[in-house]
Image (cartoon, rainbow, N blue to C red; front, side, top):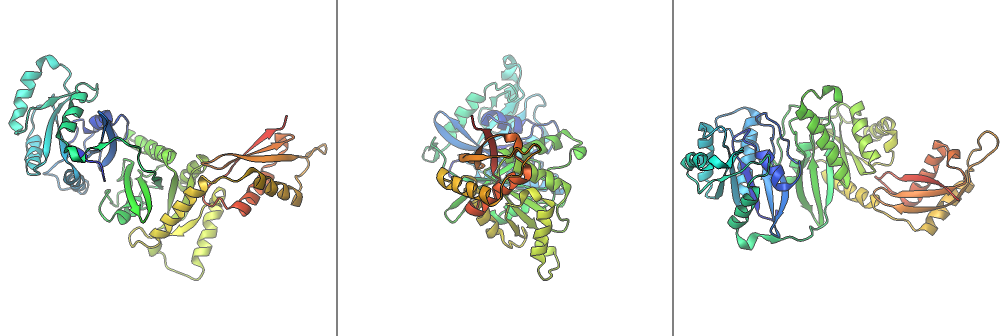
Length: 441
């Protein structure tokens, strides 16, 4: 990562995620009054005083805990602290110093990094001197009192962060180089985090057997040759009937938002389970949003191989997902790395196709030839659809307007026939095509 990193750390439930959201100006991190809600590292760029740096939200440090999730939260926080040039240590001004705060402080002192002690949840700044005095016992420079919830004093904190960052490593705010945003989506426990981890080559996100382990959408920037991808590992989407906690609700919402901001979608399907109703809903949402999409059948290494199995499996996938007959299918293993490079190649191609434009003259030739080869069916009363001309008016997805005598005469089957004719001539692999009808005046 080119920009210097600032890590927000502290024990659980001191308001780290609230502060992260306040500093970055968005709601990337989940905020809820339950310990260990934020489990993975969440990155976002911050621009302050014409300078750019990256803030990372970490899971709450609980040094004495040894459960699986707690251990992984500690691991993620350790990685964030290694990356960081500056560490923002958040404590709770209402609760005062706890034994866990002292343990965290001891860990931070061993990092030899610049540490800014932040006392959060301060509502009455009139009594601040008495509150601050106690926190000097943690052994850091003068604390900064803030209210992350209300934004009080966060500007002073940002100024202190910029002051502590090495001058030669602070980048001037410039337009980021174009990268492909890829949302990695699918049911819980389908292998999304394992896919990202294999590509990155490190434990970038927590991987576990518990469905729903990843609750946040996590961005990972990778370079593969001359290509750059921003992989968005999302929380597993669940059926609404299974969303029992508000945390699950926000996870679903975040996954949907990840699809909305992505250039392309890697839809992962469990090879052992096949296409499920939930897979239809997830991929259907990406289709409706006009996103480039690739279907990745994961855990292919667990399937007993037979002759022509891939072709038969692909036919079954297209049968279950008829609306995605344009999406390429690849069979991968996120554990062994089988065909991971192929999946990235297909994603790059699909994103490119999603932005493709066709000249009006050539498009009209294809449409008129298709109409001549297969005349539109007539409605009752003998009235027949007439297609006068066509034009591509947009991309992401490719959007085509057909000027006709009466849009109500268009049958969905004939519209699909025209779409297939366009695909046969121009490809548009991996992307939906939006065909709109307009009555010629």
